[in-house]
Length: 136
Image (cartoon, rainbow, N blue to C red; front, side, top):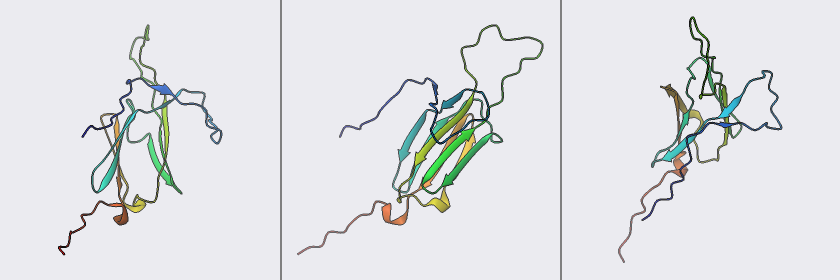
């Protein structure tokens, strides 16, 4: 059986202005690249947010909307300035709409080495179950 896996280039995309969001900082905001996987019990979101640390990351859930925001500090170089930089520094923002198949009370998030991992436990009624076959 062939799996359908969509692969995208690892390039930071700048976030488009959302009609409901007003920014108070004049700063670039990027959409973090994500991988979404699942097993029988959970959905997993892995968001690449280089430069982000646990103090600057906020994951929130309001109604059915899961929002990831991260504020990243500018790089400071002691005793010299930047002549050329290929890596753009900015904040991160991404929004997901959850369905009823997620147990909202058990969502967990962890940040390690610039990767935010979010575990979305499936609600009991959404988990895969085996149905026994009866003879006769």
